[in-house]
Length: 226
Image 1: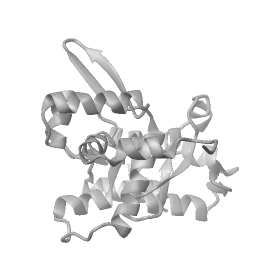
Image 2 (image 1 turned 60 degrees about the horizontal axis):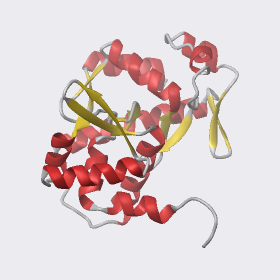
Image 3 (image 1 turned 180 degrees about the horizontal axis):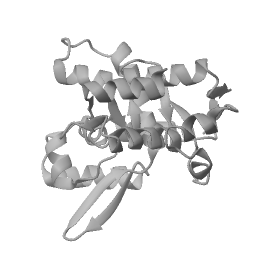
């Protein structure tokens, strides 16, 4: 057997249709109970519990208890990034379906990927950052340009404080709907947090979609799209 990561084990965990539905339901960074995930997957509660045990043992999920309920969430942003990348491949080479409706159009425009902004608006934002040298590609990584700190400080984001986290400050995440990269990491999370706190946009209940208000769209474009 070859040395290295056990790709087959991870692929088998994600490849089951019910488990894939459960994981997809958690990509937005939410935590759901076994009953809620059973509904998402269209399986019975005992079957869902069996799937959740396998996903937890495989390191893809983390669980926590609150009162009488046990909540499941993705174990980290790298799992969300993996799922987004798989969605991009499935969108490209998978079976073709009818054109999505308005709700899916909103998901293409802007949505939450774990804890950061994804979709067309997020891809445009990263394009702007790279074009102006605010964020620089460094091989497979992203690093901050020399003007990044004052740029983000003017928008209420302290990159020095974010750098103290154990998570990467900024990294690329393949966007399934645009099939190009958007910004992840603690910086990507801070930008989404800023957007929501400024009430430029709100999360669609029961969905990963992020809907901008007309004035919020303008404010976001002025601040982050150039």
